[in-house]
Image (cartoon, rainbow, N blue to C red; front, side, top):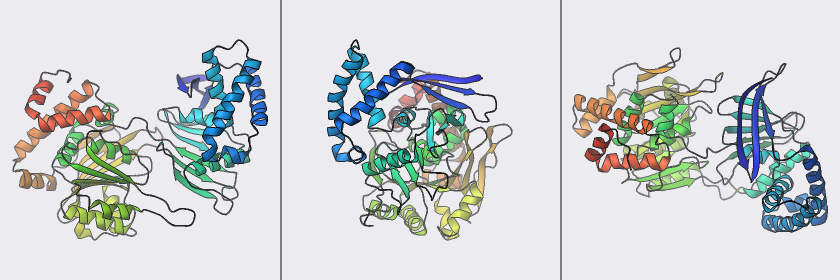
Amino acid sequence: MAVKDEYNFISNEIPIKIRIYTEKNEFVPIYEVSISSISKNTEIILEKIRQELITEVNLGMVDIIDIKKTGLIEQRFKETIDLLIKKHFPDADKKTMSFLTSYLIQKSLGMGNIEILMNDQHLEEIAINNAEDPVWVYHRKHGWLKTNINIESEEQIKHYSTMIGKKVGRQITVLEPLMDANLSTGDRINSTLSPVSLKGNTITLRKFAAKPWTITDFIKTNTISTEAAALIWLGVQYELSIIIAGGTATGKTSMLNVVSNFFPPNQRIISIEDTHEIKLPRFLHWIPMITRLPNPEGRGAITMLDLLVNSLRMRPDRIIVGEIRRKEEAEVLFEAIHTGHSVYATVHANDTDETITRLTNPPIDIPKSMLPAISMILVQYRNRRTGTRKTFQVSEILPDSSTNVLIQLNIRKNKLEKAHDSISIMKTLQMFTGMSRKEINKNLKEKEAVLKWIVKNKINLVDDVGRIMAKYYTDKDNFMKTVKLNKKQR
């Protein structure tokens, strides 16, 4: 056995130890969860208490999944727990009592060990495939891993799905065996019931990043170069519209968050998403909006198109759209650009050419002549073998709707390299800013210096990066003196 990684964290007052190791005859590393402060004997006693609890508090599954009764049930639990813990652990102090209470409530009312996985900030995805197989997780550093956690039965998996569905006003039944829902935390859940999923009931949980990505993180992890970031910043500053493309889990939404780091503080921003993932600095003039699924009777849906059309009546300067999927959405989006709004949106495509093909064919099917309204295409790439994400291409759309790749990832060297000189972006900037090409290049170098300074000073929180951008836009001369002197901003 070879240990690859070890770390600790707290989950609902419970100290958790994680060990990731490889084992002979196992082709995937093991993600081992252990509650270091609970011995095997203690665990046996706690399980006995849990059974007593369920009997004494008289809980049925219907009670547990009724959201209106959640607070009442927890209160009944805590009252009974105090008595039972004192009975079985007479010498327990206040801290131990609190820890044991949290453990028992999580085991009895929550999702048990799945909640531990949800509290590990290193995980992106949690996958329950059936009751026979162990739970799988996708780790930011190590990729897919098998855990030492098993769900006791197919009924238990179904119960978890029902419990989550109740909390978000959705249901999963034999007649409706598929459920896709967004939790209030921003996490996304997909559930399926057997026999639609042949091996058993499934739950796939995509976790919402507690700390959104910033341009600092992207540069520090070599996801993007300072040269490419400076060019994107220049485009955002002068209100050029940008499409972010990439395959599944390539970091499109993360890049959307990074692009929004460059917004000036004096403009009205509206974001439209299916799941609330965008996070902008708190001091910006920002209205976040999300779509709504229909209720069980099929009524009350609010679509991306509804929100897009409505947003144009809210006098936005910038519009962020989570993902373009249909023709109607794209048409409204391009109409927004033509009426003077800057638009930032994502689309599923693997490179610049595929992005154009995707936009100009069904189901999106935008006329090719409309494409030059988009100034820049950013393509995100994920290496599935290593799990690393990179910016793959930065491109521009020319007046004849053809494309010009400006920066390209050299996969062999693992670095972004200049591919071609800009034609369209440079002309647009020269026309609308009055700057010469030489002045634009000087501006890019200045932005590179700011980005290097941000990384050096480890400024990587959304609000902090936003403040730096605000200072750059509102007091540039003094701020650039700070950067040149390499002082830390207060």
